[in-house]
Length: 112
Length: 113
Image (cartoon, rainbow over all chains, first blue to last red; front, side, top):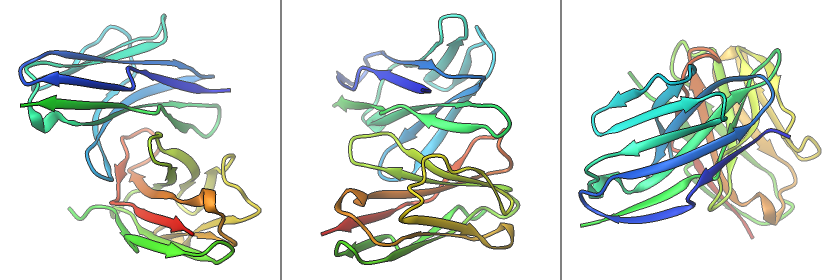
């Protein structure tokens, strides 16, 4: 059965800290891995990763994929209170029609 | 560009009643998804449409859930009859096609009492 596991489940840090969120997966016919940020209801897209070793960056956020070890990390540097959210990892996989499998998320709380 | 629209935003029903949710995707998006997100969990894919055809519905409880996508645009998700364990947020998302990132609507919070 396809699965996506995120760790830690929750994290509390102080403003200015750097955090690393983890996502590991076991799926058949991997296509891509995506990171989303969920603050209230609707997840918003952060990154899509398809190739190993190529870092994607957007401001203070960055992510990288390791297809050999089947994991990805999301880094947030110089955290701000506005980074408080649930960070979701999703993997697209399958044969024929691809489906999306989400992890349970990491709940990040940044203290002022 | 308008986002994904969903209605209603909130719904409270009693068990064994029926309920329907509506989703209007971003214009031009061929792929539409319905997810169920139970509190504290990640979204679980219920059904995925490519235009008006079903790509995946392997996790849709077909004895009580049904979904359709009219003319490859709007979609409705129905639950009949509802159970207590159906209480969740139902998220609709769309993408240009299945190779692109998904854009999510605000969700419908369903409470079954």
